[in-house]
Length: 121
Image (cartoon, rainbow, N blue to C red; front, side):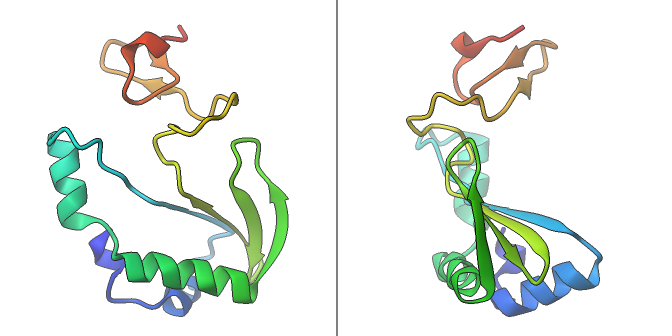
């Protein structure tokens, strides 16, 4: 979110390490373009593109490439922290792997955030 815009990628990783975390996932938020309350919040509060670029560059320069996760994202070790950049936070990519199970207000599970036809159970 925009709360992170005041930091560099190096500062973020220093803070993550100081908190004792052993893993981090950076999720790139996207908007559906439907002007939902969520879309409006994201457009107002998303992290700057320059910060995302800085994070990716920091990972590439300071991280060790590990393996590709089943949903397509690459996992890295950065300062001994398992690190993933999730460019597809809504699981909209062309992937046959179930990435999320979403529990909705009706107590049913779905595989997609934006499609009630994705009912699992």
